[in-house]
Picture (cartoon, rainbow, N blue to C red):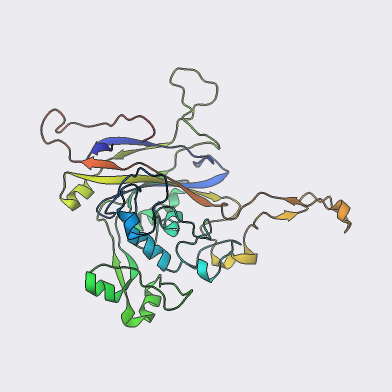
Length: 360
């Protein structure tokens, strides 16, 4: 069954991460992005009974045995659209068939996970309309908070190059496809206009809610897989509770739908950036042979090799995967329902706090 939470109630969201986080952790730069998505932007949102991947078909999208978060059309738009070619992809290999928004530095081959769009998952804020609402951004660099908040879809529209004929016929925007094999749909207004009558750039998506909370990320050490607080006074190590964020469950989706309840899902995105280079200023100019760090580099780092004799080759290989050196990880909840707060009885007008077990 589904958990449900009343609008306006208080819910603690708690997590752990493998590589640590927080300003005091000097190994990485870290940003946590908390978001939720509901049935108004993801019709058919549901959990499933099968652990198989949902088929990329209309039949799969309507089959209740498969869990479905993002809708099928969201993924189809993603696999039709050209990827952002300004992004840093290091020395990862791309070719003409791998230049879609499903192909990223982390996922160059475009391996599919449900109907998630890999480019949107890996980068925040995203530059096209998404079905996700922002809750909070927790970052080591609070100097970027103003940028995160003003670019949140909570407070602004984003654009997409719509197939003009489909838009005229149905009133719905689907991504305009390219004109030839290996030429993918435009991802910006200038390129969209090149297609003249075939494509039209449309901006929409603003949720009309407050900008996400943005504050310093909570500290977690490397390899802290669980809560390390000491409620019983036993202190074998410094106290380090699991990072958490306290969320006041919103009512905006209920207001939009005019409903007493709505099905939603929550995700936590964990973006970690290596301190080996400045991830914010590194772009396509450093791709390929100019990559800031090479993929699994091998050389004589220590300096033992003194001549060309193969017997004195002391080359060492560093375990550096440039697909993962600076990456985004994600976890999602099961679906849950947001309900209207009771208008009568003992809870009407009272503060409601959710006390949950972990794991849902």
